[in-house]
Length: 226
Image 1 (tube, rainbow, N blue to C red):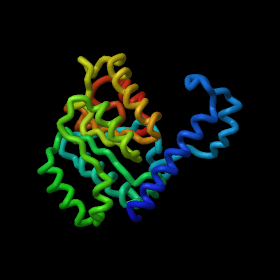
Image 2 (tube, rainbow, N blue to C red):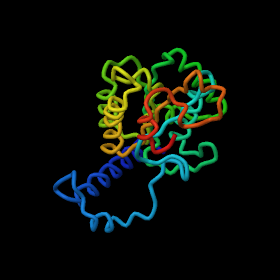
Image 3 (cartoon, rainbow, N blue to C red):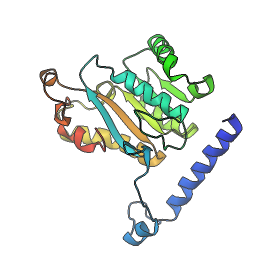
């Protein structure tokens, strides 16, 4: 896909998103049931068919040093390549990703990306559609600015604990308020926001469970997939 056709595709997608929003109601907080029926939605839009929703919050949770970041890099590379991820078909729109990295710096990412690309084999043009974000004070603002400049299928947050702005991650109210801001991003820009999170040390030897994540149960409750 050349740069011109890619830009035209982006513009067309944005026009479709804007026009569909205008057809609902003047009050953006209230939508009538009849309007929902007239949308004729036959299936939930997916980023990867039968796995990851196109819009909403999702999370990958696991113990330290188990390849969580590697898996998200693989997902990002699959998106920009427009290829399957773990055997699930890519059904996104933009082939574009924003990757907020708090655990790996530029040097580490450059090494790991190059190493992983020996298998993934993405081109430089495709790689340019992964935008890595490092060392920003206001993550929400940085993401919104990046999405306004150029839409993306997914915003990957690696890792959740480093961007959490509340005082207590075990507090349900603080967790919900924090995640609500990312939920708004997903809805406003029609994208998936994917968090990388950790399990508690005491749960590492237990069977995998969504209840093993560090912090409030509200984190799990806000995720569409975990």
